[in-house]
Amino acid sequence: MQQFIEFALKNWLLFAALVVILGLLIGNEIIRRVRGVKTIEPGQALPLINHQDALVLDIRDSGEYKAGHVPDARNIPLNNLEARLGELEKFKGKPIIVYCRSDVSSNGACALLKKNGFEAVYTLSGGLPAWQTANLPIRKK
Image (cartoon, rainbow, N blue to C red; front, side):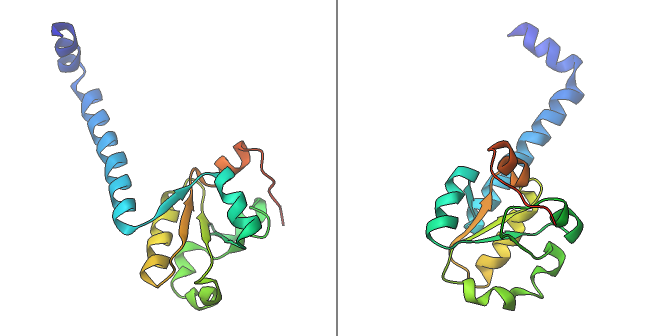
């Protein structure tokens, strides 16, 4: 224990950074849960897409979307989402799976959707990279 304390004191900046990073991770998770946003893994998303006609919503910019996206995903960039909510009205009763590059921005998008009456809203854990890591198909336009 004495060695650990000495190490921590000599490397206080490292430990301060560790505490900040842990705080941000825990805070993000708490905010996500308070907002009622559910996280879904790529493998869990498939049954929603295939059997419940879930809408897959890509909130990245159009250039990123064209470079590669989940098949049949609708692209509405995050900065346009609030103005274009009317386009999603018909999906209020269906699951919506939102994704971005890393799932950080998708949490905010999901909160916006929940606030506007969309009930079954999910963020894709890990974003598009997680989808690709699961060896699921992507489309390019």
